[in-house]
Image (cartoon, rainbow, N blue to C red; front, side, top):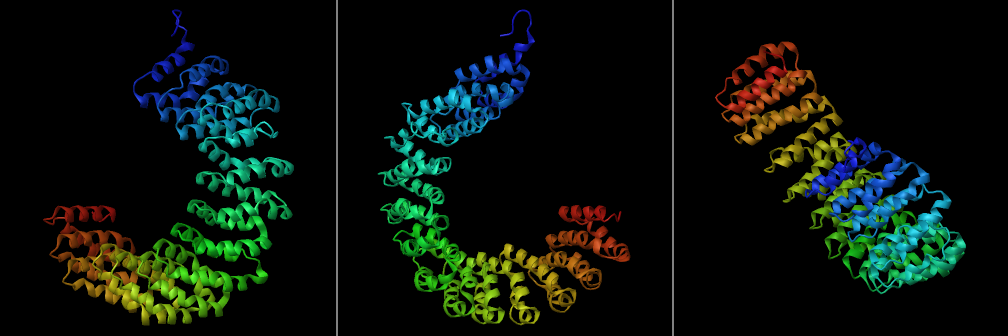
Length: 580
């Protein structure tokens, strides 16, 4: 394309054209990603007169190239000469807003929304508004869908826009429903009441459930905009209808948005309308709906009006919760287990002991690991309410049972909870009830459990101190060095690595080091190279005398071992500890 006079300024466009026509998609994608550099090279005028028309004419490509283009153009305002020329970006973005691929359209709409902010009011009316109208009345649903995303940013005057909400294509009605709440926010209240409510009602009773469920989302936004006295007549009939919709997906959406709806409609309507609706959702015939509602139990109860919160929960919500504890679906039980503990802080000590503890116990014994796990992970909020004595009498036997569960993930969950539990129980109680468990995990047949148990010991030493470790933990750990199973001997080394820092120099040098050095003669190469790794790890904690006189000779011996790995790790330890 460069002229005979060797006009270099045309070069970037020529290269771009070549690259965009190349068969290799990656090359085309790369050149689109370099658009801003090319635009800079061309300058604002040629970007407007040459680059943009070229891009508008050549929009037919792989989706990923179009996606990159739609994204780039959203950041092009300064490259076309600033806000007064920003309307030049509309033609290519308009084309992109009509393509078939949803992701590309969404990105084009996002870029259009971005640059709409940079249009002056006059330009918005002259250039942007006609674009939205063209899209809204396009033959293909793709353009009409995109139009829905643009109303709220460009259209303070409703009248001519409203038409496309009655569209005969479900995808367009769906897009309209998804943007309705956002659109309502930019309108004056009178328009919300006169126009948006009727649209909202129409979409909420659409024949397609995918449209009705999006209207539920709009319901939250619209309810927050309306004064309290209008809610009962304008929003509640639609919301009641949605909560009992024949499609489970719509009821699911109501359950999922329940806390937001509750805040939007306020305490009075919540008491009269939402409490029975919530009860129904908790008893819904579809498991997905029950699970979504179960997930909201704590939030719903927290947001109830304080004056009669306890009475509402005990009379209306708790009976449903009791049923859900033995639900047939594990997702429902699991969702409930992740929030039910939070009720104890709302209901207080007596109610927790009388009504909630039996439920927690039932869940701790549930055959579904996830349910048990969710209960264990949230024990601390119950402990705050009823105290550790009560908790340990009621729940500890169940926890001990889980610590020996056949499923290793359950055992793992208990181990991870142990330091927290230990801190809550105190050292004497821990030693009496749980210490043996912690030691037993060190010789579990699953590596992940042994590893977690080692880490658990380190956290316990950090909590209870070096003296406790010296009396309670260290002797038992070192005793495992003579175990006939080499995996257990290796666990000794892993424990020493983990405990040395928390125990400090004296215990490490006097009690642990001799055991590690002795294990350098182990018959299993795996154990020997782990000795080298352990010495490297605990080396910095030891005093220099022990390093030189005890550690160095052993590492030198291992460095000439017959096994390659043992040699390698010993040499590494020597160089890291600077013993060469």
